[in-house]
Length: 231
Image (cartoon, rainbow, N blue to C red; front, side, top):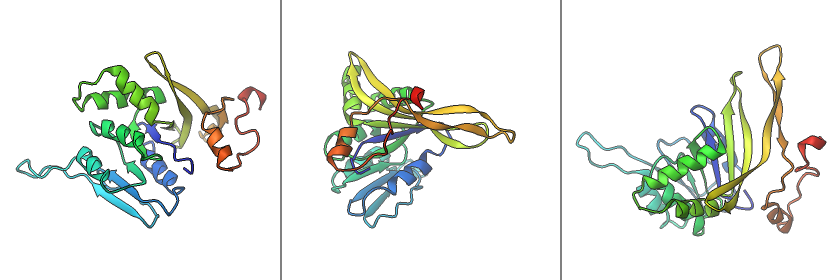
């Protein structure tokens, strides 16, 4: 969080995306101004300077609706340091990517998807829902420049919720957004109580943002990105 990386928490229904987003928000410095956009309100941030905005459905007459996209547009006038969107689910995806690219680094959101690649595909479809007639390549360039990391979370058969992938968005190659897994959950089996055994292991790939930690003087654990085969 200190490097202000833009992130996306991806996962299926009931996997704990909002809970993980809430946990990540605890590492945001108290000095920053945070604006949250949700439908409904679920995040419980502990920082002193938090503005919580909630979308509103239309009344019985079909009037008075306030969408997440409208809230996001107004948020940009509130001078936020970071923007947290409880779940991106429509045309607000385009405005979110624009915000991440224009001075609101360190923003976070969640999305329904079963893998990091599926998460990007859903995000691309949501931008198309904004009816802006953008070419697919332009959307993918926007995604690759706005996002730095995707956290994939899943609910296992034992009921436990675990992060299965920590994936870096590494840019573009041709027409494709390049993803590289930094950590993956390595499942070892199931114990006698039916609990899934395993742990998150490094793939051996050194992410590009590690240089930012070094420049900021943040010490990383020795051997953090050591190859799985060498463990």
